[in-house]
Image 1 (cartoon, each protein chain N blue to C red):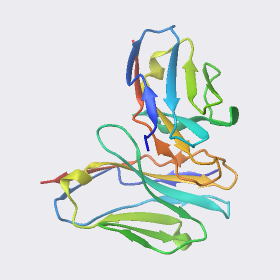
Image 2: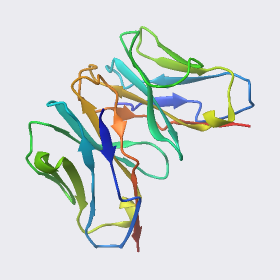
Image 3: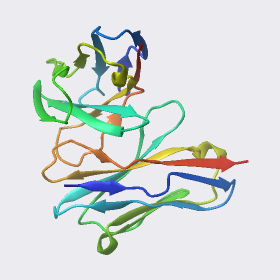
Image 4: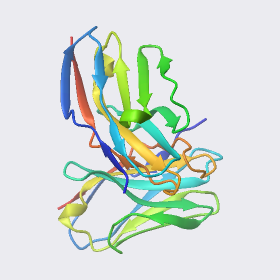
Length: 115
Length: 114
């Protein structure tokens, strides 16, 4: 069975610090997809990134970067120079080749940026 | 392009009643999925519809049901409400229902059962 683990329940950092959110997944499938979503206080889940299991290239988008390592089954998310607007709950999620459209979510990490 | 819309945004019901929630996907998206979010259980998959057919279902009792219309709009129904059904219900749509395409979420319907 697939499983996504986010061991960090809550993180607080001072504005402008860098912060990394960890995500570890378990699967026996060879084809799968990983996602990160952001949930601000408004409640809506905002899509951030998708990665497939064949693409281990790291990705950078502005202040956001993602590190995908199949060897450790991890898909970590780093925010550089954090801002107050980054405060939210962040979810890592997973879809396998045989899971159709069912997203399996981690438990989320609540990130608080202190001004 | 308009995003995923969900109505109503907030709902208060009493135990034993039933409720219907509505979701309109992004134009052109044919796959609609529903999720329940609670503090205790987190985000859990309810079911997914594609071209009016339920393709996948999560581990929820039969009180939870859904359907999809020819215009891809979807509804979910919960009958005989229980206190534990209080949650944020999120709807998500994706482009062609193929594996691994990103799902775009609506703002959710917050259901409170008293």
